[in-house]
Image (tube, rainbow, N blue to C red; front, side, top):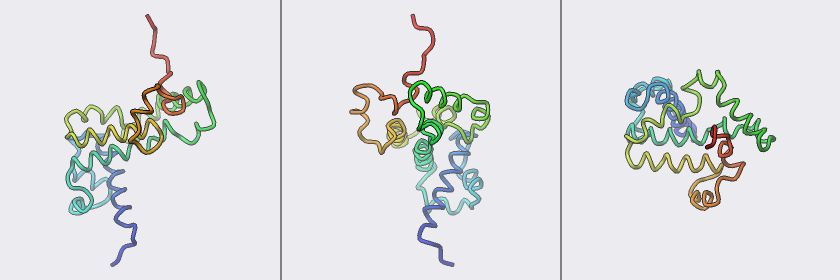
Length: 166
């Protein structure tokens, strides 16, 4: 049986989506390749056709998850500006529904604790993915973006009150 030209890419995306769920729910150490493939509805034998290792999968899933950060860059917030946009994003991010769905919510809280124990390549992939997520475009030019601070549209939480100031 022949598959369509995009079958391999669609399968890889299924695995990435499943990995994001499993690693958020269980963490990197506890989440196994078998768990990820089961979540994707696939057999573990097909894993290595898409990824070299579990570390490679974690790096790719982390970057993919950051690219899909729909809460911060959601379509329903684009028409809002300034404090109104920040309040809308914060309300969604801090909502009970978002907090209760760890495996579908923001990747930062459940996955960042695993990052220091990952390979240098995984940490680099995270930095590049985070830069892309912050700037809203393909990464690579973050140092220039950051020199003058965060423009309002690029980092909605940069102006969020930090609590009482001394």
